[in-house]
Structures are given as C-alpha cells and as structure tokens.
Length: 313
Image 1 (cartoon, one colour):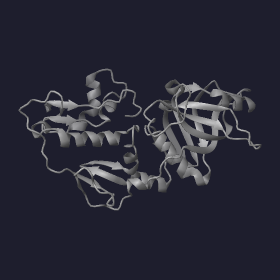
Image 2 (cartoon, rainbow, N blue to C red):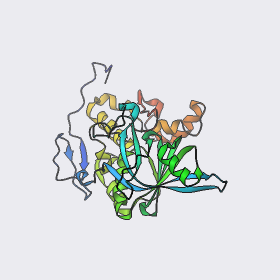
Image 3 (cartoon, helix red, strand yellow):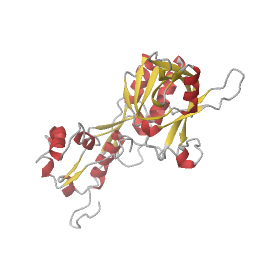
Image 4 (spheres, rainbow, N blue to C red):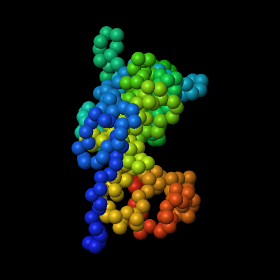
C-alpha cells in the first residue's frame, strides 16, 4: 500500500481459507483449500466458439405506415472482432485481444449457390447493455443503450422487405434448438458486462451458478473463473473477490480494523436514481454499512471501486 507508515507490522502469514469445488486441481498458491461440495470444476465449463450461427430479426417501421414489426434479416454468422478503430481492419479476436475495443459482426450466411455474401453489420460490444432470453433460449433479444447505424446488411434486408429504420436499437437472434446452449454460452463469454433478463435454460443456469471458489461471503462461479484468462474483461464478482483477497494478504493487521472496502456496486447505487448531491446519494446506501462498527465515517480509510463507463472491469 502506497504511503504505508513504517511502524505498521507486515501482514500475518497465517493461511487464508479459500474453499474450492475443484478437488482434482492442487492449489499452487499455498492457501488452504476447503472440502469440495460437489460443484463443477472450472475446467468443465464450455469454452466459447469462434463463430455462432442463428437467424437474425430487427424491428422496423413499415414504409407504408403499417406500424412497428419484426423483419427477418436472414441466417447470419456472428463473430467477435476487433473494432476497426482498434486495428484498422476489424480482425478476429484472439484470447489476448479481449480487453481491446471489440464488435460483434453479423454477416449474412452463404446463399444456396455457395456464394459468400458480402453484407454485414457490426455492433460495438460496449453499446450492448441487455440480453433478454425467452422460450428456453430459442429467442434472444440484444438491446443497445445507444442507437447505431443499421449497416449495409440490415439496411438492404429492410429495403427488400418494404420496411425502413434509420437506426438500430435492438436485434433478435433465433438459434437452432440444438445450438441454444452453444450460442448462449458464447454470448455470455463475449458480453460479460451485459445484464441478462429472463430464464436461462436449466442446464446452462446450473453450470454457471455452481460455486468454484469461495472466500468468506464472496463466491466465484465457474463462469467467473473463466474470466481470469489472459486480458479477459472481468466482472463485479471477480473484482470483489480480488479486493477481499488483497486486504487479507497484503494489509497489515492494524490497518484491517481501519479499512473498509466497498462493494463494486456501491458507487453505482450511490449515484443512481438521479441524485443531485451527496446527501441524496447517501440515502441510497446508508443501510449498506449498518453492521460496520462505528459506521462508514468511523473508518480511517474507505476504498470505493468505480467503473467509469459501467461496462466491464
């Protein structure tokens, strides 16, 4: 810790108990591993595909005033690519590129003659904010928090359907029944920041919710552990777990009693609801620290994680 007073003693070397549901994997960190509780190993979770296939539909306004409707764009392949501004050419994403600006590219599948279609639309991942899942994953709606240009693929298909739309605010994708698990797993990997609404299929939900690591009251699921790969985008659970671990490992004992590390949701809640000043914001979070001895203002040091763009860590 920068600026640590020299009189403070080093942190305790006592082992820290991190419960793991992966008995077969030895701990290389020296921490004590708890007894397995029957959960899935992080290694058992399905890795994302490089490309997924589905049918794409978008909402539009009929050019003849016949109201809002869904227009079928067609069968598309979807890949995650670097943004053109990031590499000049929008190349495919590798395992070491996922922290750089990326897009989802929706490209029309080959036609019946085997001729590759050149029409595509790219959507910046940072503007995708919600994923609504229904019909056991057979209908997935991606909602954008910022309207974008329709792109040549969507514009061409809307024109062919006698419909029109200047901007794209959401899109619906329909996986084949036997591809639902693969499509959802891949989308969840590509979009770790996205809020999911609706019920995920039981098999997928069960695998994602199995606890792989636990430190005190903070748990990491198998999906969370996957995000620890090279230069992956992290989520709130991983950050909360890491901050708790840092305090336990690095902070000297005298400091621990004077230090409060807020949840990664603290600042988001503090500033939500259109608050105009600190007093209004405090009303949003005052119950969060009721059990803290001396209250929040009784702590000498307060650490508040802030996600400036509220996308991912």
